[in-house]
Length: 199
Length: 375
Image (cartoon, rainbow over all chains, first blue to last red; front, side, top):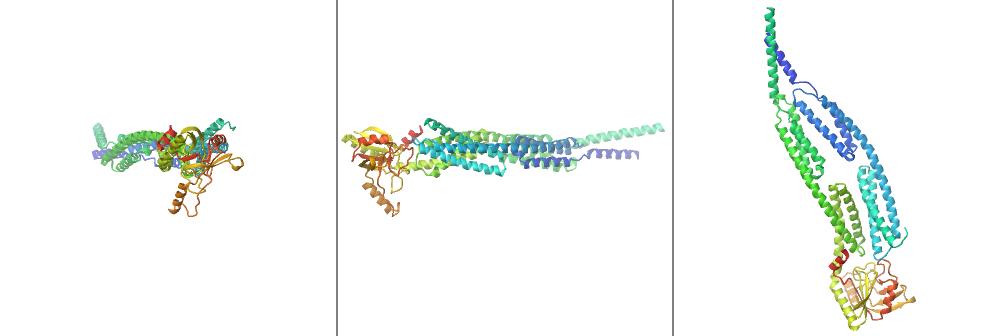
């Protein structure tokens, strides 16, 4: 009788051991996932691609660790919960940083567009004074064509800027226009200096 | 009795402990090993592929790797829902191995593709820059359609955008821009070249007229004027030898023969000076009127009316002169040939009524002309 009693106790102990009732920290996991989703919504993947990828990777590792724990007889999700909490905090921080970075890039784009417009006006003014030597008018016509194209490109950049989807793209587009305008201005100034025309 | 009972309980406890210990050992031995290492290797390989931007350069392989990894995780989750002793992780391991393999392939493919894109982007950039420079050297001064020149300018800006992408190692975007730039730059270059090739079909006539004009000047020891539209030059020959060369300007639509009044083209053919004008008899400093239209011009004009190339009410042009007021740096006349006043003074001094005036496209062949412009 006593023998049977101990066997029952032993079995219950083993079953209790193998079905250790630690639970997946679902709330923390959901919070981490939601924080990462929010970061993506505010374009963390665009403005901080490396940081965003690293956080995503941490989430992947955490999901792996959950399955690893679930595969074990004795589960422990404490570290995982801590990790999930840390990811949620970092993702929220990243979202905040995106807003700051976005504002910086937006300001940079705005400044660059204003500078490009100044360059455009300068190029337009210089082209009127450009010398007309042999083939001079043809060169001036070519420069006028380039200025028209650049003006269109700057208008496109303004539309992109107003859309507010990706200020980095605006910066790149305006950079190309500004480089072209600087080239045109340098070319015109050199030609005018050679022809003895005062700027 | 008490001692015996205590001994009995102790024995039971020892036996129970041994049973529990062995059960635990047996249980542990029967639990399948989780595929932690394999899945982690797959994840690390995918992360490496992502760091190399495989999503952009090897999207298919990367997606396959990602899908296999997701399958590994889904299978792992589903196995973990089963009773612990009945779990089987073989399929998880197999998916993870496939994910790792695909991710490694994506990484190596990405490295080679981005290297090849970078190299093709830089060589295409330098090819298009050369083509752009050639276009500007050869065609800039030609009366080509404005739309064609605007296309060239658009290509030039796109080329600069592609250059920025190359600097930022954004090869995919750069390749897209370079393809578009190529359509504009090569497209406008090829169209302009085709226009010029068409024009140069008249080269045999030009060569014949120029040779005849120079030979006549040599035979008679007299003066002759040879005008070349492409290099925009007016030569004065004496006794078959070139005595002077002046820069010349033409009608704004000078590429091609004059076909009708008001087409802004400068005629091509063999003419003679019919009148010398100076003082108040000309608006352009000094002028040499030529016998345009001659018989051939009239025949060609009538032929164009007959075959519908010109409208029935078209009129033939006239009053073509070599005159002064040139040096504007543009082709601005309505079909005349304009020289600087100082050059006009010289020319005017040497020539007389009857002096031959031959107007051609070029004495150089198309290839010679290209070579002269590019080098």
